[in-house]
Amino acid sequence: MRIRDPKDWNRPIEAPVARGMSTPEATGTTADVEATIDRVLDETTTWAVVGLSTNTARAAYGVAEVLQRAGKRIVPVHPSAETVHGEQGYASLSDIPFPVDVVDVFVRSELAGAVADEAIAIGAKAVWFQLDVVDEDAAARVRAAGLDMVMDRCPAIELERRPAGRRTTTGREGDDA
Image (cartoon, helix red, strand yellow):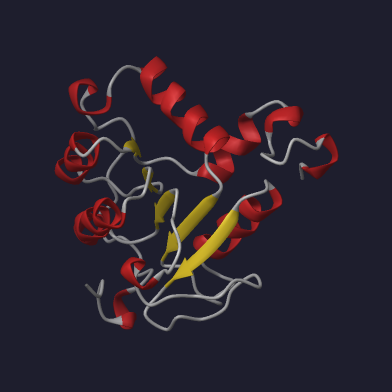
């Protein structure tokens, strides 16, 4: 399944959803959300970044760079299948020939559900919807499939909030940026 036409990638969200609009029933308690974030950051290595291109002005570019510095392998997913940050790109999640731990989603909310469904189909362990990407129905499908789900958060921000010794997954204190 192809996600969509390249001209739609990384388009600004016309009507951002305010943080905190998710219901506690859908997302769990604050402690549950924090535990999920910690688990995803601590126990995963390979992150497919959907919407990542060579456009340095886009948030996906900078976040992918932060993930790499934290010891993650990033996999660009974009219809142009460009190489970004030294990693080969793929046109869709289903084109990636190796297992992916996390699918990090940089698309508009109305397009995120299809990405979440593809993440389930490829056997990812977690789906991470970036800031202002909110789709409660997709999140429910992800959780029902047994995957971890983080929504309306940024892994770069979450990594920065951690104490210096927990910002990397390589186990080497000097690796954190």
